[in-house]
Length: 454
Ligand SMILES: *Cc1c(COP(=O)(O)O)cnc(C)c1O
Image (cartoon, rainbow, N blue to C red; front, side):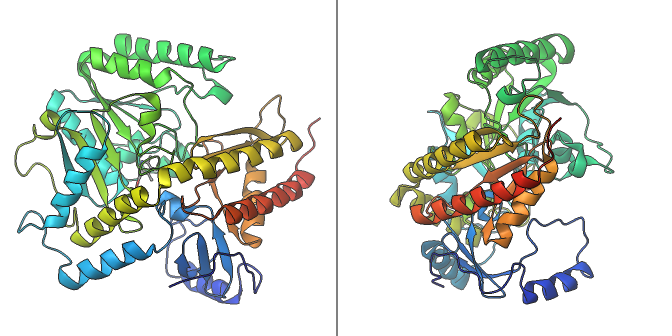
C-alpha cells in the first residue's frame, strides 16, 4: 500500500476509533503488555503510519527498531508473498529449506572478522541471547556470564536476569538464572566511577570491571561477556571511547567469549552493519533480531565456527526457528540495505537529527545530553543541568505531546528520562526535519511546565 509520506491529522490523536479499540484492549489484553501511544495502526509505508482514524503519523520509532528499511517495504512484501505462496514451514529439524541456508551464508559473511562462521536462527532477540549464552557455556565449559549496568537483553528468564533495570523488567519476577554478574558501564554523562572526561570514564570503568573479573568473579569461570555496543533500552548510552576495546582485550587474553548483542544496533542502524564495528572489535558471537527481517519475527546467532560447532546435534534449535517466510524477508532486507545505501543514509539522517537536537540543547536547559551514533540518537532530559536530576515526568509528557501532534518517538533509559529516535533509515529528509520541528515545539511546551529548580 502506498501512503503519502506526509504528516496529516484529520482527528485528534488518539481519534475516536483508536479510543474504541483501546476500550476493547483494556478488557482483553493484560496491562502488563504496555504501549507507548494509545493509537491503533491500520496500514503503514516508509516512515508513515496510517491510524484507524485516517491520521498519518511520522514514524520515528520503527516499531521499536524493527523497520530500518521502512514500513512495508515493497521488496520485503514481495519476498514474503512469494515465499508464503510456496512454503510457510518445514521445521529445520524435520525436513529443510533453502532460505535458512541462504540467510546463514549471508550473515556468516556479513559479521565482522575473517574466520569461518556459523549461524543458527531463532524467533526473537531474547531467544537469540539465550542461545548465545548456552553455546558460550558449552564451548568454554564455564558458567559465569558478565553483563553491564543499563543492559537490556530480553524478557525470558535468563535474558531478564541479564537485564539491568528492575522496574518494569525484573520487579516481581524472581530471577532464578544463576551466575550472572553485573559490572559498571562507561556512561560518559553519568560516569559511575566519577570520571569527569570521557577518557577518565573509560579508563576508570575498564580498570574497575577488569579488577572485578580478575579478583572477584575469576576469569577461569567466565564463559562470556555480553554487551550492547550502544545501550538501547538503557538510554542510547554510547560507551566512552576505549572502554569496550579494553574489555574485549581482557576477554581475548583470558579466553572469555565476547558476545555483541546487536539486536537494536545491528542491520545498519548506527551507519555500519553492526554497532561493534565502530569499536574495532571482532566479537566471537553476534546476536541479532529486531530489524533483521523487516517486521517478521526472526533472530540469529552468528559466531566462530569452532564455538558454534562445539554443541552436539540436537542441542540447539526450536520448532519455528528460521521460518522460511521470515528468512525470505531477511534476505530482502539485507539486499535493500545495500541497494539503497542505507548505511550512508543512517549517517546522514543521524547528522541531521544530532545537529538539530544540539541546537535544542543549547536553547532548552532541560536537554542535558545529546548522543548516539548514526540514526540511533537520543536526548537525556534533566531538571537541572548541574545536578542532572532525571526529568522523568517531562520525558513522558514530551512523548505524549509528540504523538498528539502526529509524531511517534520512544522513551528509554534507566531513569526513564531519555527520548530516543529510531527513524526508518529510508525516511525523507523533509519528513525527519518535520518530525524534529514537532519535537522542538513539544519540548518548548514541556519546558514551560517543567519544575523550576531552586
Ligand atoms: C529488544 C532487545 C532484545 C530482546 O529482543 P526481543 O525480540 O524483544 O526478545 C535483546 N537485546 C537488545 C539489545 C534489545 O534491544
